[in-house]
Image (spheres, rainbow, N blue to C red):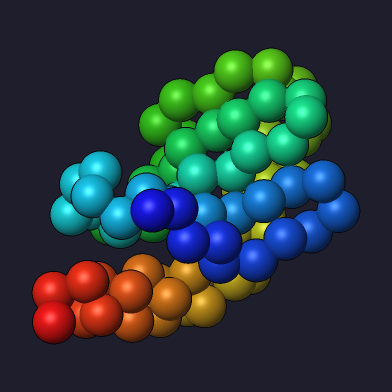
Amino acid sequence: MSPTVFKIGNYRFHFFSKEEDRIHVHVISPEGEAKFWLEPTIALVNYSGFSAKQLNSLQKIIERRKNEIIKKWKEHLKTRNN
């Protein structure tokens, strides 16, 4: 299962249900994909296809919407564990 947190243009921000416990978000689009940790600080884990400019833009979006992503993560985790 791969719940979508939100979409912006061609970018889909999501996570995989059973991947790992550390809070993170994946971003996918026709141009590429990336994974960012959200804690303890926002950090790029890996990527393919995105330019440095795109990665910078994605990180800024994640910074602005970090609380929303974490909230969705915790809601989904609670649902998954029930």
